[in-house]
Image (cartoon, rainbow, N blue to C red):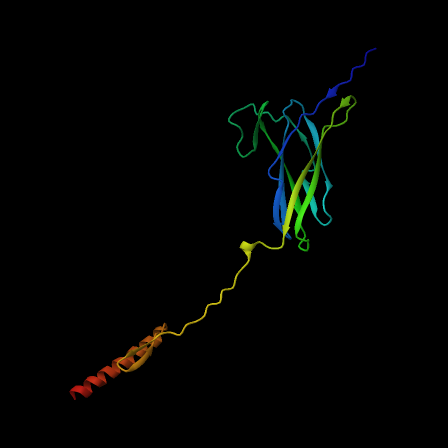
Length: 198
């Protein structure tokens, strides 16, 4: 009797949308892993945080999934998705979010987070598991210079004084005060005319 064992090879494409993020204390850094499967088979992919500084909360969303064939066979391709051109053709990618939550009291500095992904599963035949570890760096800062406020002290200069026919009148911005000043000037002008011609 001849026994045959099946071998399942895993072909998984991965890339990341950035591996460095700068965040304030109390904020959450977000990274995205893009996956694609060029083969005509499906396989599970699981994610696990293997190393992170104490105090940081690291979440992968989702924690596991079944990755189907990613080949794009119909055009135009679906809008709103990420695509990657490979030797096997155009592939649609599946995004995985890696969220790193930073506490408000966390010490500023640069911290590395490692996320492990395992693709494939053990079956009755010989299975090949594909394993990758991805590194993400979070720079925690206490403040952003562009967000700080600066107080500017303005020294008030005295308002210039104008002399009109021997009277001292200040420049005012209140309409009522201006009206009263003009009324006083008009009365003085009328009295001056009466005095001159009277």
